[in-house]
View 1 (tube, one colour):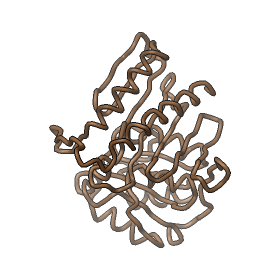
View 2 (tube, one colour; view 1 turned 30 degrees about the vertical axis):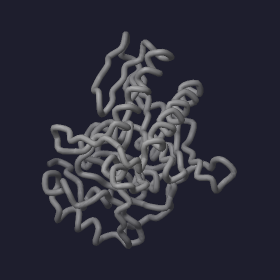
View 3 (tube, rainbow, N blue to C red; view 1 turned 120 degrees about the horizontal axis):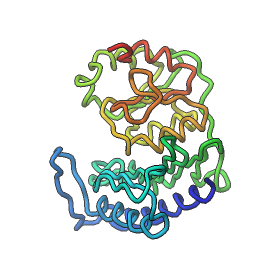
View 4 (cartoon, rainbow, N blue to C red; view 1 turned 90 degrees about the horizontal axis):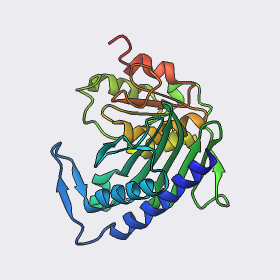
Length: 263
């Protein structure tokens, strides 16, 4: 696992060099995918480069990526899950909240996760049973992550990505009810919401429409930091199509308001 984490960090280095090189470029090529979301040359270039590196170093491993789908490799025990740029809309608009997400799943269990946000000068990582860490340039290279000790929603800070999608999930009223139950809300969005939960700066994060590549790495990092990560039905998974991450202490209270338990 240590070798796999080291390799995942190397893949993040590769991605960072490419994404930063095209960030805020005047000639950045942006297209629209069939689902009407943007995709840039950097999204595709990064995923292609990571796949090429995986094929050279881990040829038997499967790969799942946002831009090029599934490659089952020569075996099914191990699968790399890649989001080349989480936060592409931010990337296109010159906002710094975007990251490359790399996760490794072995025998159906997440064992390595890396979230690298070079424009924010931050990188988070975790391995199963090995804890979660961040390098933010402020603590001598890295510090161990631990979720907050907040015990009630009335004292909790909630982070979210936006209002879109909630009506198709549990309903905007349920989301607003959760927001009103919390002490404070801020829309940090995407991967950053989950990383702030892992850091203990935010206590609750939720999204109504997400995929496995959005959640695999963040889930492991949150859990290794002592938090809890489920879908809105309370199932501990990254494939539920929606997500709720908390410090664990307020999770059931949040689910009672926003959850689709039994729904």
